[in-house]
Image 1 (cartoon, rainbow, N blue to C red):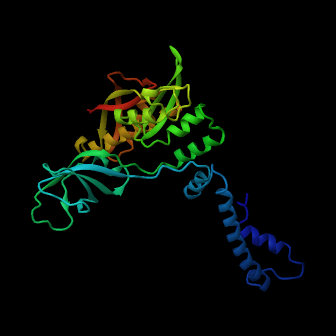
Image 2 (image 1 turned 60 degrees about the vertical axis):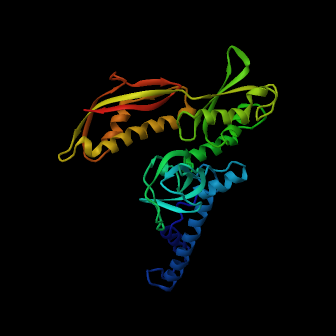
Length: 353
């Protein structure tokens, strides 16, 4: 709305209204007076553009989007901290600090006194530490300490919800009125449950009194049985199915199901630049493929079928520095795109010739 209100435009408009006979040349008294005001007015219009942009959820920046979402009772999913089981050669104390590389950890509670197994938490929030299974060392010297290691992920850390995903979730709420039992109601309240990344709903054809709700985890993978049981209990406990003991209204029998997955084995031929080999780039190639499949899994809730496309796999790999060309890609042994239907694609064996 105020894009044209630049310093030069404002100054030109001001000088054009000066009465005839008065000097408006650069350096004149009138020019200097108008120039100073034009600079301040441009600043004011810049702030007006900022306020206008952040008045609306479809253009607001993240901070204002969060404020708007909080007003509507739709908070953003903030990042969380990963928790692990760790084993040591000796007794440790709650509150002790441990370290490995860029990450520090805090000991929470003792889980197994005999085997010195403890619950620990990473002090860095987000999903990056989830797959770091490493040796640990105490930050402060401990004479009896010889070794420590992470042995199991207990609770995955989560990244803060992506801005555009949050924006879409918030905007969708404007056109959907959540009334007990309608789709908007189920979608809103179930996706608030910790661990749920998205859902799809349908009535069971054989029994129209049963609603099947298929869910994907907030890590955009097949949810664990523990998470399925947790959501089932909160929505419609099986022992009292249809009695309205959970989120589901009385008369609604709800069955929570995990999203199905399809393993995608990938075989491709890669041409490397001089001084580069597969061994040099293996981790980057693996990540490029996984990033593409993750994009497809994140879009699962918005589509009835997912197609894994050879062109996209080759394009993601070709972006890696050191790779000249990618050809002859096969998905599950066939040189064509793979339609996985309403399942989510999971990376299987990646073979690079």
